[in-house]
Length: 249
Ligand code: NAP
Image 1 (cartoon, rainbow, N blue to C red):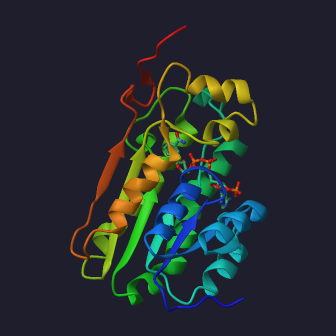
Image 2: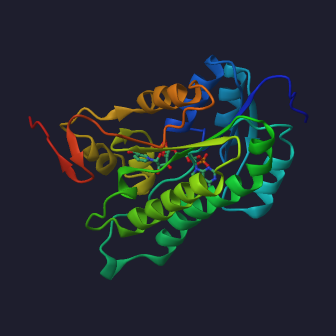
Image 3: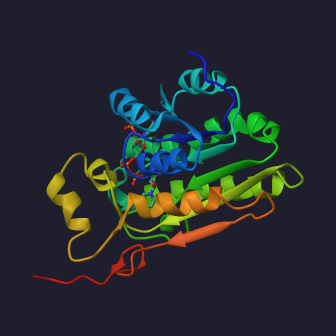
């Protein structure tokens, strides 16, 4: 398959649901040819058909998959590092090593693999942009969340380090750190337990994926000399990762 290099290309990882899917729609509406990547190709294909983009299977934890994904891209103007998530909610004393490995492989090493592979193309574009979706968990530790908070801290430090290392290159870097967004995030975190996932958003008005997509669209539409470094965004009902105002009944 060949992708035309005539229009500006935006790559969105983890675009088969939630924030990534909404972001792909927003960037397509801004005129980008959007290349969407994730493991669930059926969902990606439906999205790509809708927005006139390209769907490519991608597992950010797999080196060969990342190589296959990145080598077919003729140019890259925008990279949205969004693939990620959490598994479990356990105190350190009961940490599940497999859950930790999943979180570190997906959020940290996944972001590293894709970013490293696409850096030359982002620089070549003459006006590249890397948006990394971290979390309020990249700024705070919270009880029972160390697997996720440590991974998001590490992912954020990788992204922030690049901001300095790329000084002088035509690439901007923006970190978006959301609080609670109602997506499939909690369903994945609690291994498909819908009731437990729903309880996360009970009595609050959470953000929705579109809220984050609009912010990423704003970032991508700034002029080349404007670098929005960090954007922390939470629902009005959330003051810290585990501090909510909830209405009951
Ligand atoms: P989501 O609906 O569960 O979406 C996660 C996306 O990541 C899916 O498209 C999933 O696709 C993809 N993904 C997971 N593992 C992958 C892998 N190995 N390779 C490629 N893609 C993979 O959750 P979301 O809320 O939109 O999450 C998006 C990002 O926002 C994540 O980095 C998350 O940590 C961050 N975030 C979320 C919240 C929140 O409250 N929702 C808050 C702060 C930050 P496949 O399963 O098809 O591969």
